[in-house]
Image 1 (tube, helix red, strand yellow):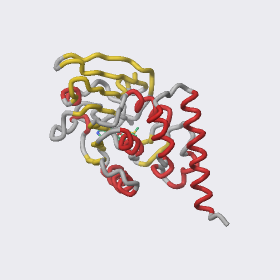
Image 2 (cartoon, helix red, strand yellow):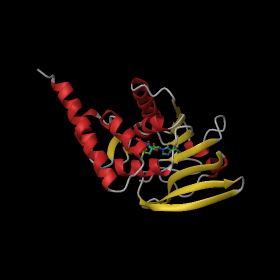
Image 3 (cartoon, protein in one colour):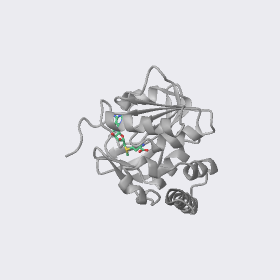
Amino acid sequence: MQSSRSAALEEYARARERLVRRLSARGVQDERVLQAIFETPRHRFLPEALWGQAYRDTPVPIGEAQTISAPGVVATMTEALSLSGHEQVLEVGTGSGYQAALLHGLAASVLSIERIPVLAERADVLLSELGCDRVEVRVGDGTQGAADRAPFDRILVTAGGPELPLPLLSQLTVGGLLVGPFGDRGGQELMRIQRAGPKKFTREVLGACRFVDLIGEAGWSAPSL
Ligand code: SAM
């Protein structure tokens, strides 16, 4: 007889399959991104009591007043990075580590920075457990990037800032892309910036969104009340 654990795992795999079909129907086209979402056990990045919500297209609280973003938003942002597998990626806002796990399957290496130590620690342990050995998790202010590892081919900001953090722009390779939400606290525009030349940047707005605050030297100065 099948154990209840393996039955649950099979049910999660079926739920991921349905999620991927919904994302594809809604316009996500990058097969590598859809495959990574299918292969990554999102439930593991949630508090266990909330595992039942893992494959709905909604954000879920992960503690410390933070959230794991909805899979649809994660898919859009990941697709916007146009990853081929060879890129050095910087993620600002590790949170649960889910996005970093997806990036691990799609790029050469990932440096992920989180300002809340307990979240960084938890994500680091889980990412190691899942074999994501090309992800480094750091505690710090991601708005300053990581000068010791720069330049990056791709930068993904997963918290909403008032404006584009200048240190991140300077750490992007020529031809590189930065994706992230910038604007007011109540709502932001999801932007894709390309460094077209050493001093030339182009900007594209991908849509409206609402993220938790990007807090740091080149972000908001304190959490909203
Ligand atoms: N990518 C995450 C995931 O897959 O679970 C979700 C990110 S959550 C929407 C945003 C995260 O950004 C929070 O964990 C928050 O603490 C973090 N954050 C906010 N400002 C930051 C900063 N300046 N540097 C690093 N992390 C920051």
